[in-house]
Image (cartoon, rainbow, N blue to C red; front, side):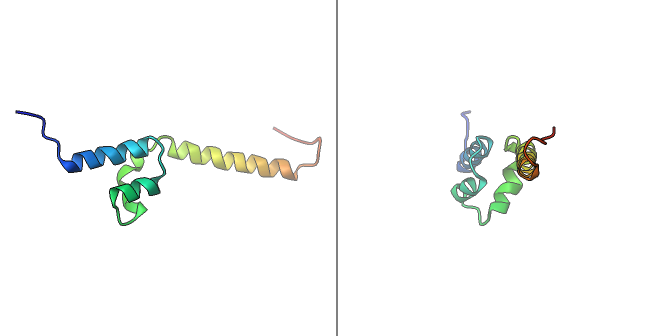
Length: 78
């Protein structure tokens, strides 16, 4: 008995690989033919590396940058 691979299996593997590789979800959604990016995110967000930590890092950088702009020269903290 040979290995049976359905087209859907290949499609799912392709979209999983795209999401896990950091390809923007909108691109993966379009390739999958999903009606909305929400469908893709519901199905594949679990394989997207570091989504939460990346978001936290970006907001941290933005807040630190805003704080530095407000501080007078010579009074930078932490």
